[in-house]
Length: 339
Image 1 (tube, rainbow, N blue to C red):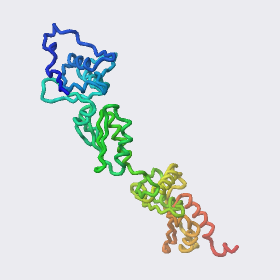
Image 2: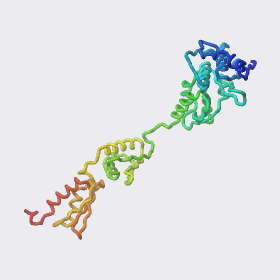
Image 3: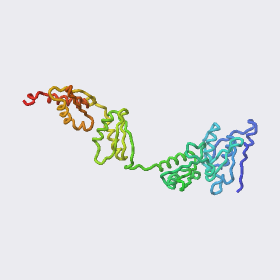
């Protein structure tokens, strides 16, 4: 088919003095042929076009048509955006041709646009309104991803090519559609989450000290759970490793433990208790028996000092008061205990 070129120079009307020029045409089109859009753009924007004859015709050999009303672009930039939108409605894509006087655009339909579009690896790198992106897939099938993307592409313009050997797809379309296609491809290529995936997570505690929280979580460990945890005391953070399903449960337990403000009577204290009649070893034995669960969990610690006849108690203020009250009863002379 013959190759036809619209003159690259501006219309002759543009060369006539401003006083002799006609009033600028308005972009009002009612099922108008695409050639009317090109004439409007030449007079309003001062651009030229290069195209082959068949580009302006649809599949039935008729001139492509467009309808657009009530648009009122004022600046050259607004008129240029409108031009691209009108061409888009006609199923055409325009690429600017460099090295020619004035803005000159080469017109393509879908197949030509696919070949002429600059190829990048991310939509953000596309400089114009139209382009092509190449996406390398590592897990998902290129054929399956292409089938998901096709319904989102511009009808008659967008395309997706599949390269099964390299596990890649090349998508050509307007930039806004490419952003959607890129998101679909990345989501499809993301590995599915499984309950037995091995993960490492951290949990920042707000209220409960990390060592106390760790001790409490250990007491809540269910039979068969294999997760591991460590406390970062200075950052008040717990670090967990284990299966996804287990860590989800442990994180929920930690959240529930850490959601209440600490009550003053349960704040951790370190105090000494003076013994009179009981030996420190006897007092320590009594306290270790009384606070066995807390000692095994690490929330209570007992120390005995024979030289000073003292016990050192570390735990909550509440437990300390219990210890003092108990020792007051037990730390009596042997005769009085027999009565």
